[in-house]
Image (tube, rainbow, N blue to C red; front, top):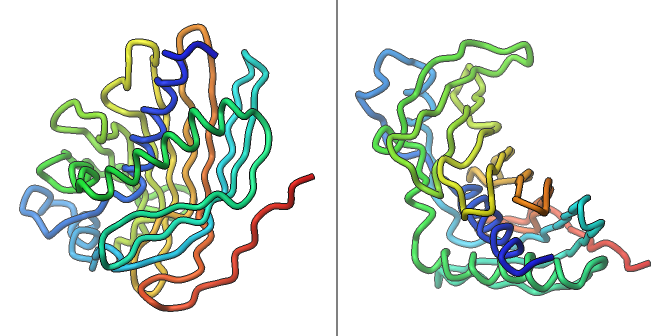
Length: 239
């Protein structure tokens, strides 16, 4: 793939990864007419002091007939340092080195800088509108960003009606990562472990000039969160 197109995909994945750690913050009078929003904002949304997870990454591009996968141990400790170690991989070496590893390395730098805080689900960043209850029983809120930012999404969040717990977020980046990337659609799923809301899956579809449709999926299999054992993740075998 042309270098500039790979760079577009890397930037899109970096933005998506940063958004997966987006936090809610504090009750706000801006949504006082939306009880479900107030329940959501009132929830404890502390960041984990430490975690360890095995991530499964998959990406493909039909235009260039390229695909790749990678399993990576990731962890962050009380020193606020993000670390990763590749344990299993396959497919296109170009995607693995220029997309997967490049995005992980940049996530390490973002973790240290605190940039994901720009994506917090607050009234300072978003206007929230009630979408009502869906057929799946979740309550939907429309997200309208107050500014164009690579770390903000125009779309919706879906909450449990009884307690306002965030289950899913979906939409598109409000700002294109580059001239070559026309649109990036994102879906993220969340779940609580040890009382902490953590991302469990992320899917993106980027439409890039010339390269066409590129897809990416990342799932998180947690071993521990805040010192509490969660599971025993296993890397995929190399065939």
